Length: 157
Image: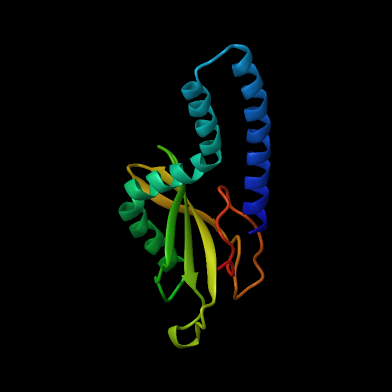
């Protein structure tokens, strides 16, 4: 939550400064109120763009990358491929970063504990190849880190 808060406070602080400056400039230029309002609304939406990008990429590539994530989990020796959340953080013609949240431990021992993993893949010879992984946070381990765009930590809500 800390990184999410810092991100939004910083972005909206900058945006409100720009809106104030923009309002003065638009008043001096005697711009139409609709134009002024439109510019302000667009500026307020800027911090949400990384989330929109992730949502669009996830909607497009989720099915194909889910298969690759399950293969990567199997290659790491994971017994369970139970995935609670999957987000495509970044994907292009040569690389992909996939964020997942999984329950910790055996099904009977989970007690709502979760962990996050970011899988990195390379696109080689017409297929995705698992490259590396990192663990930004975990309820059942010592991982502490962040992601961009910032997503909720383990115990947020």
